[in-house]
Image 1 (cartoon, rainbow, N blue to C red):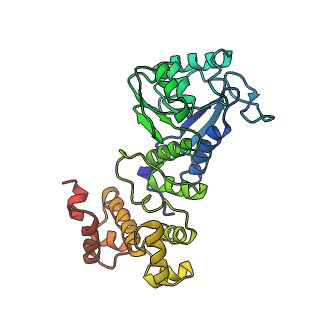
Image 2: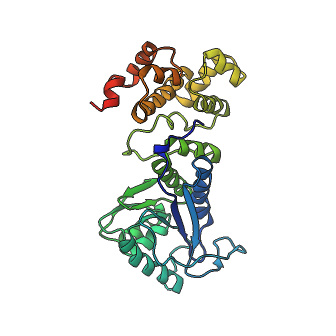
Image 3: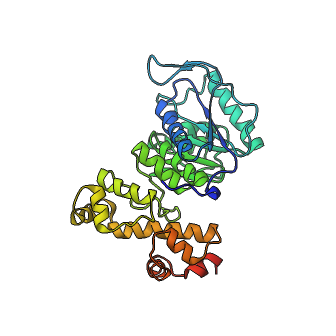
Length: 330
């Protein structure tokens, strides 16, 4: 993967506080936590992970597996922090338990005062609702508890059939693996789309987005498949966009014929190898035009185009504005 532009990296590490209750669903914790951990490989120092709870030890949602060494609920969180509230095993939240009441009270006090971002996974949305944090907000949760969520927060706009929903400083996701999707979405916002793409590739998961999201970044497009040969060529192109990539060079990298590679790309990525190469090179050219004072000649050289004429010719396939007008924002 090419070096991430400094402007794409967060100015300071984002502290992430996973808030746990007895019988926590471990996938709700481990999935997002792994996203942030892997993101630190590609954008070092982006996330600091903390695991907290009303008590230092508790049973997890897996019989026989106990959690220990949890930090207490923070007295306050920084405004740029993220609190992650996850689901618990069972048909309902154990509202009568002291730990649940402590967590709901903590959320009701701290979120309005500290202004941190709140992320809920699965049934965690019910805890946020009980704390009054979903009123007048769009939100979602696991399909099995959407009715309960609407009853707890009648002033919330509860959305069905959504992977995740972002409304201001509160983000909610559906069940289980949707927490991974939301963590990837946050990673893309804080560290850039290329980092999120690399994390998803390493974790062998799809990068899924909501239908009303902005257009998908070129660094993420055409990657929602699991074919290893196509991913291998896409990874090689992303790592070295300016390399002399001919159809034959890509075929050699894939250990197949150029004709067969074209068929694989069409079937699994929905584009040709050359189109994918052009999209990545143009994405890199956009970044260089916006983030550097390079001349168009230098941009063409750095992105693998043989000349400014070639860059302009390919650019017109993806952009209505000329490179100069795009750079100036006209």
